[in-house]
Amino acid sequence: LYNVGLLRYQRREFDAALGAFRRARVLAPREFDLTKKIVQSLHALGRFDEAAVERREARRVRACSDRADVREMTAFVIDQLEVDGETVYVYEIFEPDPQWTVYYSFRVIVGDRAVRAIQLESDPVTREQGVAALFGVDFPDERHFTTPRAYRDLPEYGAIRETALEIVRASRTGIPPG
Image (tube, rainbow, N blue to C red; front, side, top):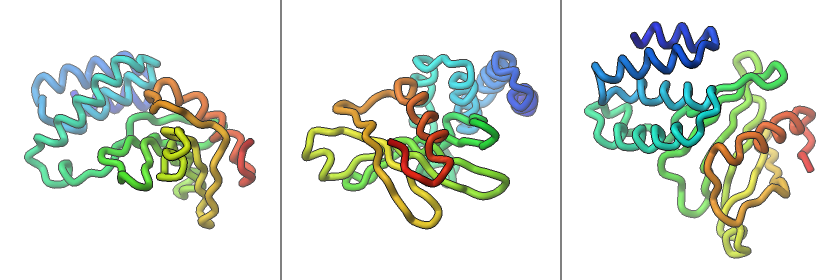
């Protein structure tokens, strides 16, 4: 069933993929990869509220896993997108560093190379200014830019997805987006 779900997902048949992953999870409820694929399928379908519930389930499954590699994971892919010919993998960070926090990282891949990361992030200075999170852009040459897109309260993924994708598009030139 897992492989059927993967095939359906790759064909962009997200409803069918979701059904296959859910049926497989009945047989293996503690299998982290199944929960992860359910989250990805729900995001692909735009069902963000359901995906938020499943992301909490992913955290629970990770914490209870018998597998050390799963318990030691620091992040997992919650969404996969194609944006103007670039592949974007969206990671949710499990236990953000309390000082220099990254909540979500939109990693842009071209071919087999990471070309930039758009991150919903936070640091002590912005938190002192009453900003819970803002978007930053990291480039492979170690340049980092923050954008004016800031949030007083930490938003849910569904609320920031389109903004992050706008920044993905705007940052293609290597110049920080305004």
